[in-house]
Image (cartoon, rainbow, N blue to C red):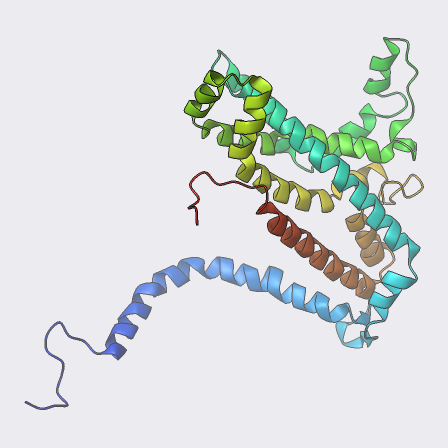
Length: 318
Protein backbone atom coordinates (compact mmCIF):
# COMPACT_ATOMS: atom_id res chain seq x y z
CA UNK A 1 0.00 0.00 0.00
CA UNK A 2 1.27 3.45 -0.87
CA UNK A 3 1.94 5.34 2.42
CA UNK A 4 1.25 8.62 0.64
CA UNK A 5 -2.09 7.44 -0.67
CA UNK A 6 -5.49 8.65 0.48
CA UNK A 7 -6.79 7.78 3.94
CA UNK A 8 -9.11 4.82 4.26
CA UNK A 9 -12.82 5.60 3.91
CA UNK A 10 -14.17 7.47 6.92
CA UNK A 11 -10.70 8.49 8.16
CA UNK A 12 -9.93 12.00 6.88
CA UNK A 13 -6.82 13.98 7.78
CA UNK A 14 -6.79 16.98 10.17
CA UNK A 15 -6.53 19.46 7.29
CA UNK A 16 -9.67 18.09 5.69
CA UNK A 17 -11.55 18.21 9.00
CA UNK A 18 -10.55 21.85 9.57
CA UNK A 19 -11.68 22.78 6.07
CA UNK A 20 -14.99 21.02 6.58
CA UNK A 21 -15.51 22.76 9.92
CA UNK A 22 -14.81 26.19 8.37
CA UNK A 23 -17.24 25.48 5.55
CA UNK A 24 -19.92 24.55 8.09
CA UNK A 25 -19.29 27.78 10.03
CA UNK A 26 -19.49 29.98 6.95
CA UNK A 27 -23.31 30.38 7.03
CA UNK A 28 -23.07 31.47 10.65
CA UNK A 29 -20.48 34.10 9.81
CA UNK A 30 -22.66 35.32 6.94
CA UNK A 31 -25.65 35.75 9.24
CA UNK A 32 -23.46 37.52 11.81
CA UNK A 33 -21.83 39.80 9.26
CA UNK A 34 -24.39 42.67 9.58
CA UNK A 35 -23.82 42.75 13.32
CA UNK A 36 -20.03 42.51 12.95
CA UNK A 37 -19.98 45.31 10.38
CA UNK A 38 -22.16 47.43 12.64
CA UNK A 39 -19.91 46.69 15.61
CA UNK A 40 -16.86 47.87 13.72
CA UNK A 41 -18.39 50.86 11.92
CA UNK A 42 -20.69 52.18 14.66
CA UNK A 43 -18.94 51.15 17.89
CA UNK A 44 -15.33 50.00 17.67
CA UNK A 45 -13.96 52.54 15.18
CA UNK A 46 -15.71 55.57 16.79
CA UNK A 47 -14.48 54.46 20.22
CA UNK A 48 -10.88 54.23 19.05
CA UNK A 49 -11.22 57.59 17.30
CA UNK A 50 -12.61 59.22 20.46
CA UNK A 51 -9.71 57.75 22.44
CA UNK A 52 -7.30 59.46 20.06
CA UNK A 53 -9.27 62.73 20.18
CA UNK A 54 -9.18 62.73 23.98
CA UNK A 55 -5.46 63.52 23.71
CA UNK A 56 -5.99 66.37 21.24
CA UNK A 57 -7.35 69.89 21.05
CA UNK A 58 -10.01 69.45 18.39
CA UNK A 59 -13.34 70.91 17.37
CA UNK A 60 -15.80 69.41 14.94
CA UNK A 61 -15.47 72.25 12.41
CA UNK A 62 -11.88 71.55 11.38
CA UNK A 63 -10.48 68.53 9.51
CA UNK A 64 -9.45 65.63 11.68
CA UNK A 65 -5.92 65.87 10.29
CA UNK A 66 -5.55 69.28 11.96
CA UNK A 67 -6.23 67.99 15.48
CA UNK A 68 -3.56 69.35 17.81
CA UNK A 69 -1.95 66.72 20.05
CA UNK A 70 -1.94 67.94 23.68
CA UNK A 71 -1.24 64.71 25.55
CA UNK A 72 -2.80 64.51 29.00
CA UNK A 73 -3.83 68.19 29.14
CA UNK A 74 -7.54 67.44 28.75
CA UNK A 75 -7.46 65.01 31.66
CA UNK A 76 -5.44 67.38 33.83
CA UNK A 77 -7.88 70.20 33.11
CA UNK A 78 -10.79 67.94 33.92
CA UNK A 79 -9.54 66.93 37.34
CA UNK A 80 -7.74 70.10 38.47
CA UNK A 81 -9.16 73.24 36.88
CA UNK A 82 -12.76 72.64 35.79
CA UNK A 83 -15.25 73.21 38.63
CA UNK A 84 -18.16 72.60 36.26
CA UNK A 85 -16.94 69.04 35.73
CA UNK A 86 -16.98 68.23 39.44
CA UNK A 87 -20.38 69.88 39.84
CA UNK A 88 -21.75 67.62 37.09
CA UNK A 89 -20.22 64.60 38.86
CA UNK A 90 -21.93 65.66 42.10
CA UNK A 91 -25.31 66.14 40.42
CA UNK A 92 -25.07 62.76 38.68
CA UNK A 93 -24.04 60.93 41.86
CA UNK A 94 -26.89 62.55 43.79
CA UNK A 95 -29.36 61.56 41.10
CA UNK A 96 -28.16 57.95 40.91
CA UNK A 97 -27.83 57.40 44.67
CA UNK A 98 -31.36 58.66 45.34
CA UNK A 99 -33.37 57.71 42.26
CA UNK A 100 -32.05 54.18 41.69
CA UNK A 101 -32.82 52.74 45.19
CA UNK A 102 -36.24 54.42 45.27
CA UNK A 103 -37.05 53.15 41.79
CA UNK A 104 -36.10 49.59 42.72
CA UNK A 105 -38.06 49.84 45.96
CA UNK A 106 -41.15 51.05 44.07
CA UNK A 107 -40.73 48.31 41.47
CA UNK A 108 -40.42 45.59 44.11
CA UNK A 109 -43.35 46.93 46.14
CA UNK A 110 -45.68 47.03 43.15
CA UNK A 111 -44.45 43.62 41.98
CA UNK A 112 -45.39 42.15 45.36
CA UNK A 113 -48.87 43.67 45.06
CA UNK A 114 -49.34 42.34 41.53
CA UNK A 115 -47.98 38.87 42.28
CA UNK A 116 -51.36 37.32 42.89
CA UNK A 117 -54.12 35.61 40.96
CA UNK A 118 -57.11 37.89 40.57
CA UNK A 119 -59.42 39.05 37.84
CA UNK A 120 -57.96 41.81 35.66
CA UNK A 121 -54.46 41.56 37.14
CA UNK A 122 -52.96 41.57 33.64
CA UNK A 123 -54.53 44.97 32.96
CA UNK A 124 -52.97 46.43 36.09
CA UNK A 125 -49.59 44.98 35.19
CA UNK A 126 -49.81 46.53 31.75
CA UNK A 127 -50.79 49.93 33.14
CA UNK A 128 -47.88 49.96 35.57
CA UNK A 129 -45.49 48.90 32.83
CA UNK A 130 -46.76 51.49 30.33
CA UNK A 131 -44.49 54.41 31.46
CA UNK A 132 -41.41 52.29 30.81
CA UNK A 133 -42.47 51.76 27.20
CA UNK A 134 -42.03 55.49 26.65
CA UNK A 135 -38.46 55.29 27.94
CA UNK A 136 -36.40 58.47 27.75
CA UNK A 137 -38.62 60.06 25.11
CA UNK A 138 -38.59 63.80 24.51
CA UNK A 139 -42.40 63.91 24.45
CA UNK A 140 -42.64 62.40 27.92
CA UNK A 141 -40.08 64.87 29.28
CA UNK A 142 -42.03 67.78 27.78
CA UNK A 143 -45.25 66.54 29.39
CA UNK A 144 -43.44 66.14 32.71
CA UNK A 145 -42.10 69.71 32.54
CA UNK A 146 -45.57 71.08 31.79
CA UNK A 147 -47.01 69.15 34.75
CA UNK A 148 -44.53 70.67 37.19
CA UNK A 149 -44.56 74.24 35.94
CA UNK A 150 -45.98 77.03 38.08
CA UNK A 151 -49.36 76.61 36.34
CA UNK A 152 -49.03 72.87 35.84
CA UNK A 153 -51.32 70.04 36.83
CA UNK A 154 -49.37 69.20 40.00
CA UNK A 155 -49.83 72.69 41.47
CA UNK A 156 -53.50 72.62 40.45
CA UNK A 157 -53.86 69.38 42.40
CA UNK A 158 -52.15 70.89 45.44
CA UNK A 159 -54.47 73.90 45.17
CA UNK A 160 -57.45 71.64 45.82
CA UNK A 161 -56.11 71.20 49.36
CA UNK A 162 -55.19 74.84 49.85
CA UNK A 163 -51.47 74.20 49.33
CA UNK A 164 -49.53 76.77 47.36
CA UNK A 165 -47.28 75.16 44.79
CA UNK A 166 -43.88 76.18 43.53
CA UNK A 167 -42.23 76.50 40.09
CA UNK A 168 -40.73 73.06 40.58
CA UNK A 169 -38.80 72.77 37.32
CA UNK A 170 -37.55 76.37 37.54
CA UNK A 171 -36.49 76.23 41.18
CA UNK A 172 -32.87 75.10 41.75
CA UNK A 173 -33.97 73.47 45.00
CA UNK A 174 -36.49 71.20 43.30
CA UNK A 175 -35.49 70.83 39.63
CA UNK A 176 -33.32 67.76 40.17
CA UNK A 177 -35.99 66.19 42.38
CA UNK A 178 -38.52 66.43 39.55
CA UNK A 179 -36.09 64.49 37.35
CA UNK A 180 -35.71 61.89 40.09
CA UNK A 181 -39.48 61.57 40.35
CA UNK A 182 -39.72 61.00 36.60
CA UNK A 183 -37.07 58.27 36.77
CA UNK A 184 -38.78 56.60 39.75
CA UNK A 185 -42.16 56.71 37.99
CA UNK A 186 -40.73 54.64 35.13
CA UNK A 187 -40.28 51.54 37.28
CA UNK A 188 -42.12 49.22 34.92
CA UNK A 189 -39.12 47.37 33.49
CA UNK A 190 -37.58 46.30 36.83
CA UNK A 191 -41.10 45.56 38.09
CA UNK A 192 -41.63 42.98 35.34
CA UNK A 193 -38.28 41.38 36.16
CA UNK A 194 -39.19 41.26 39.85
CA UNK A 195 -42.52 39.64 38.95
CA UNK A 196 -40.70 36.95 36.99
CA UNK A 197 -38.40 36.34 39.96
CA UNK A 198 -41.29 36.12 42.41
CA UNK A 199 -42.92 33.45 40.26
CA UNK A 200 -39.83 31.29 40.75
CA UNK A 201 -39.90 31.36 44.57
CA UNK A 202 -41.19 27.94 45.74
CA UNK A 203 -44.46 28.19 47.66
CA UNK A 204 -43.21 25.41 49.94
CA UNK A 205 -40.80 27.86 51.54
CA UNK A 206 -43.63 30.19 52.52
CA UNK A 207 -45.66 27.28 53.85
CA UNK A 208 -42.73 26.08 55.95
CA UNK A 209 -42.13 29.58 57.27
CA UNK A 210 -45.82 29.95 58.11
CA UNK A 211 -45.77 26.66 60.03
CA UNK A 212 -42.79 27.99 62.01
CA UNK A 213 -44.87 31.02 62.99
CA UNK A 214 -43.30 33.57 60.66
CA UNK A 215 -45.49 36.53 59.78
CA UNK A 216 -45.57 38.37 56.46
CA UNK A 217 -42.62 40.61 57.34
CA UNK A 218 -40.43 37.70 58.43
CA UNK A 219 -41.41 35.74 55.34
CA UNK A 220 -40.46 38.71 53.18
CA UNK A 221 -37.14 39.20 54.98
CA UNK A 222 -36.12 35.56 55.36
CA UNK A 223 -37.63 33.99 52.24
CA UNK A 224 -38.50 36.53 49.56
CA UNK A 225 -35.41 38.73 49.74
CA UNK A 226 -32.82 35.90 49.80
CA UNK A 227 -34.55 34.03 46.99
CA UNK A 228 -34.95 37.23 45.01
CA UNK A 229 -31.40 38.49 45.60
CA UNK A 230 -30.09 37.47 42.12
CA UNK A 231 -32.94 39.40 40.50
CA UNK A 232 -32.33 42.37 42.80
CA UNK A 233 -28.67 42.31 41.83
CA UNK A 234 -29.52 42.16 38.12
CA UNK A 235 -31.88 45.13 38.38
CA UNK A 236 -29.41 47.04 40.54
CA UNK A 237 -26.64 46.76 37.96
CA UNK A 238 -28.87 47.75 35.04
CA UNK A 239 -30.58 50.64 36.80
CA UNK A 240 -27.33 51.99 38.22
CA UNK A 241 -25.85 52.17 34.74
CA UNK A 242 -29.05 53.76 33.40
CA UNK A 243 -29.08 56.23 36.28
CA UNK A 244 -25.61 57.50 35.46
CA UNK A 245 -26.50 57.78 31.77
CA UNK A 246 -29.54 60.04 32.26
CA UNK A 247 -29.68 62.73 29.57
CA UNK A 248 -32.99 63.33 27.77
CA UNK A 249 -35.11 64.58 30.66
CA UNK A 250 -32.33 66.85 31.94
CA UNK A 251 -31.80 68.23 28.44
CA UNK A 252 -35.50 68.97 27.90
CA UNK A 253 -36.09 70.44 31.36
CA UNK A 254 -33.15 72.83 31.11
CA UNK A 255 -33.33 73.54 27.36
CA UNK A 256 -29.90 71.97 27.03
CA UNK A 257 -28.20 74.23 29.59
CA UNK A 258 -28.27 72.18 32.79
CA UNK A 259 -30.20 74.91 34.57
CA UNK A 260 -31.61 76.39 36.60
CA UNK A 261 -28.25 77.38 38.10
CA UNK A 262 -26.69 74.09 36.89
CA UNK A 263 -28.95 72.13 39.23
CA UNK A 264 -29.72 69.55 36.51
CA UNK A 265 -26.28 69.48 34.90
CA UNK A 266 -25.92 65.72 34.54
CA UNK A 267 -22.58 64.29 33.43
CA UNK A 268 -23.81 63.30 29.99
CA UNK A 269 -25.45 66.70 29.49
CA UNK A 270 -22.22 68.43 30.44
CA UNK A 271 -20.38 66.18 27.99
CA UNK A 272 -22.85 67.17 25.25
CA UNK A 273 -22.39 70.87 26.00
CA UNK A 274 -18.60 70.60 25.86
CA UNK A 275 -18.57 68.64 22.61
CA UNK A 276 -21.46 70.01 20.57
CA UNK A 277 -22.13 73.48 22.01
CA UNK A 278 -18.65 74.68 22.94
CA UNK A 279 -17.18 72.49 20.16
CA UNK A 280 -14.38 71.22 22.40
CA UNK A 281 -14.57 67.67 21.10
CA UNK A 282 -11.16 66.67 22.45
CA UNK A 283 -12.16 67.56 26.00
CA UNK A 284 -15.57 65.89 25.56
CA UNK A 285 -13.87 62.71 24.36
CA UNK A 286 -11.70 62.69 27.47
CA UNK A 287 -14.85 63.09 29.59
CA UNK A 288 -16.47 60.19 27.76
CA UNK A 289 -13.55 57.85 28.46
CA UNK A 290 -13.41 58.79 32.14
CA UNK A 291 -17.16 58.16 32.27
CA UNK A 292 -16.73 54.74 30.67
CA UNK A 293 -14.00 53.78 33.14
CA UNK A 294 -16.06 55.06 36.09
CA UNK A 295 -19.11 53.00 35.10
CA UNK A 296 -16.87 49.97 34.57
CA UNK A 297 -15.37 50.44 38.03
CA UNK A 298 -18.80 50.81 39.64
CA UNK A 299 -19.95 47.63 37.90
CA UNK A 300 -16.89 45.75 39.14
CA UNK A 301 -17.56 46.96 42.71
CA UNK A 302 -21.17 45.78 42.48
CA UNK A 303 -20.07 42.35 41.30
CA UNK A 304 -17.37 42.13 43.98
CA UNK A 305 -19.78 43.06 46.78
CA UNK A 306 -22.63 41.00 45.35
CA UNK A 307 -21.01 37.75 46.45
CA UNK A 308 -21.72 38.70 50.09
CA UNK A 309 -25.49 39.14 49.73
CA UNK A 310 -26.58 37.44 46.50
CA UNK A 311 -27.74 33.87 47.12
CA UNK A 312 -28.33 31.28 44.41
CA UNK A 313 -30.66 28.48 45.46
CA UNK A 314 -29.05 25.93 43.12
CA UNK A 315 -25.45 26.86 43.98
CA UNK A 316 -23.28 23.97 45.04
CA UNK A 317 -21.92 24.06 48.55
CA UNK A 318 -18.15 23.63 48.79
